[in-house]
Length: 220
Image (cartoon, rainbow, N blue to C red):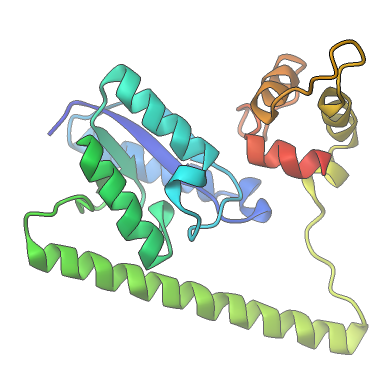
């Protein structure tokens, strides 16, 4: 097995960004790496990104792929298959992209999601992927019904406050940076805004720069 790897974390909702999900994922990945003599040299995180989104549309995973190619890293570690994808279509298309690039995707339980040699393993991967997609759909439906029940009883259903609501100073600075330059008429990219926010001391609760997707929601 390769001795160098990069880790991939994904949280599917804004609420999970501030919760323990990224810590749990990171702990599981690092424990597996330690047990198998793997050096995790980098980590990429897609915050508030749906598991049904194609991997090429995710800012974090796109950066991961570019990093792997530049640094010649051929191993990616994830906590479990659903952290990579919850949609069977996104999963299989994503696996195809990794296989084409010669990159292996291993879970913290040791499952090689990119192993195409054993047809039974491919079948089981697809079965588990479909089951994960189904369970996610059931969970969404249960939450929808619960919200409807609360609205019927109280007239409203309050959710978690947005990042901008919880950090007004951050929101003001992000929106300022998002304005067009009065001199050139050009706008900063979301990634540049995230870097400038980090330089100004505006970081996530994990102490890392905000992802472009989070910046997009803040300035919206």
